[in-house]
Amino acid sequence: QKEVEQNSGPLSVPEGAIASLNCTYSDRGSQSFFWYRQYSGKSPELIMSIYSNGDKEDGRFTAQLNKASQYVSLLIRDSQPSDSATYLCAVNGRDSSYKLIFGSGTRLLVRP
Amino acid sequence: DADVTQTPRNRITKTGKRIMLECSQTKGHDRMYWYRQDPGLGLRLIYYSFDVKDINKGEISDGYSVSRQAQAKFSLSLESAIPNQTALYFCATSDPADRDGAFFGQGTRLTVV
Image (cartoon, rainbow over all chains, first blue to last red; front, side, top):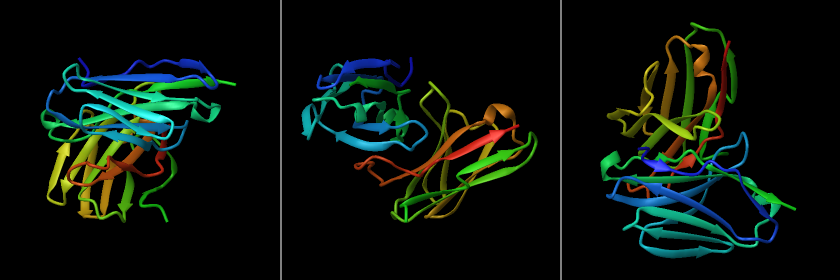
């Protein structure tokens, strides 16, 4: 089992819709959870971080964390074509010696 | 200037050659990472360093070595490059608690022919 798992996609949504991206992780000792956006050929850019159970909202983005079920999700409201990118989930925790481990990413396509 | 700078940005090298990728940061972070990215495989950890005297292998360290010359500098070497090391390489830094996540350099696109 991979430490951090994401559906590779592509996830295709129409412009204006809500895009829902999911990530599961194996380390129950994980403490910090991050979502990165990466455009093709560019470096990953941090868009959300979350540390406790529940929701965290920042503009059009909402991160959701459920430690009991070991998943973290990212909702993008009012999706725009410029949101088309690969979204990477990253986790750090005790079992990984507190180093950042990334999932393989989900490719999001927002159709105009 | 970028907080995390990688050099070179692009490099083509021949099989068997030694090559060094360099990373420097101005964020004052203790933690530095080298990742490799291949299409569809996400970011895979090659080596990481939590301080100047602490260097650790990641999941794909074979064929690579690193040097942490100072808090701000972390270099990745390919002792004898091979074609399947063709990839996009990223350096990243983070604070000790990773509270703000990792900050990435611009990447180095390496092609081994």
